[in-house]
Length: 263
Image (tube, rainbow, N blue to C red; front, side):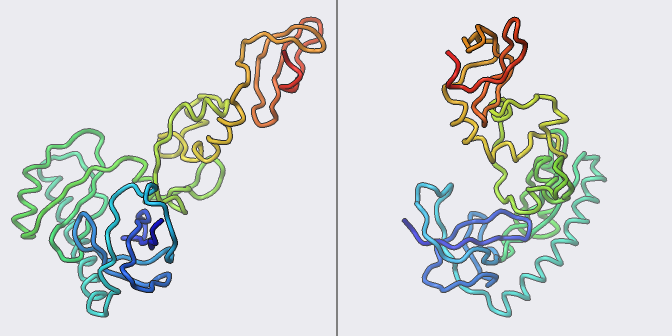
């Protein structure tokens, strides 16, 4: 087990875990941290707690220091100049007829790198754009293509449930969602029922997947023949959480039968 602290690099970003490095860090304290991109300005969103090292998805890096007033002003300057760079980048992309929408721009805290995230339907050859941006801003340039799920997270909206999108409300990690999760829950595979506003599978399909897999384990499949107290019939539907089968029994019609009552 290792003590870590949860830190958000930006307001819409996921939570990253860092070694607190001996600092007592309360929620909402701003800090300077070491990342793969260089030093970054972040905010504590989860106070110190213990975690199994095997649960970490990447090597643990450290909190460098609690931010100072000068650090905060430098951070604000980086944000302001990154917004200007975003406008410039989009203008250059349009001039070069690159089919890309620049979603945001950000400097690393030490201004060693300027990162642009963009949305595009296809792969984009942005090498010339990157060279021109580097000549203007005199820093390393990174252009990173993002997906439609990331766009939905930032734009926001309401889901099929009528609630604000999970990804823009509380879901920090956009984990992979597979069609098998919908199948495990016996859902209609109609895209209008299982796709979110981003056009991808609903993130919430993952929430109860483990429970459904456990409940479904050992259950018979639709189309199997079973014996009931009313005679032999064919399974035409499943009620997974109730542990029941919908069975079509000749001369008795469709009946609901408990799993244990079927042979």
